Length: 66
Image 1 (cartoon, rainbow, N blue to C red):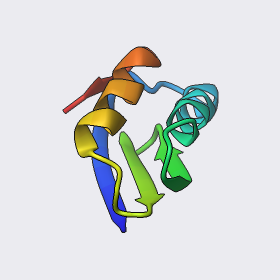
Image 2: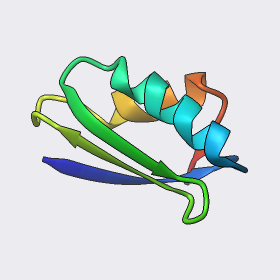
Image 3: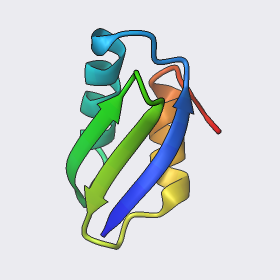
């Protein structure tokens, strides 16, 4: 399953990498691609992951979801 979330606060490639690392810690996540240029994170997961858990991981990493 794929989930796309708009994110505010990513300013560079380092921000994207930081966010990818944080979301990869969520159980059930298989792959994460964050784009600071587009302000979007795409999460591929096994379908058991709640979107609110992904949003919390993003917030805990210091970014805002839209």
